[in-house]
Length: 255
Image (cartoon, rainbow, N blue to C red):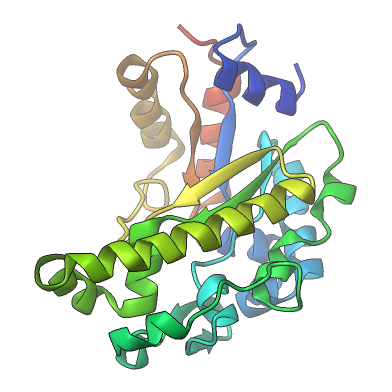
């Protein structure tokens, strides 16, 4: 099986030759071509080159179009803090919806118009071809509402103003569905969704090839045959550790 066939077989519950390996490579991929992460996140040409290079070098089964959860906020006019070699971040102190009344005036941005959302849609399908699976990415309702409102305000809103939270999540849902449709029209095969109001640190970065293999060995037993070796590889993950992840997946058949 080539990579794309393998992933679809897993999703459809059909027999596979081995487990798919789908680590997300963002800062890690930029490092593979010596690029600053700012350029990866804001220039589709750099992003395409880094993701494809990392995919080829480590033999992963997909190419993922993902940078950081600020594209939608930026295209709505929210304040974003950019850093030379680190993911950009929402300026929570000056969140776009620090004043709830602004929600009524927001309009869902068009992902086909110039902006950061369009940057994520361009350029990959022509280079990826049909052997590797191409994965798009959108933000989930809790993560995106936290970026628009500020996570501390949002947590209080759940108690103080649940009607506002529902309205905000309805807006976000419409925006992300429109974004997803644009990705599908651009040729992506699978849509990923991140919903991180907060994130946890991987075991992958600080481990060894042996500890990565040991940790992965328990996953299929817990998750069953429809299991993928993946998630984000931090920038300074030792290449040997990422190779251990891919090699484990590609040397094990599903139960």
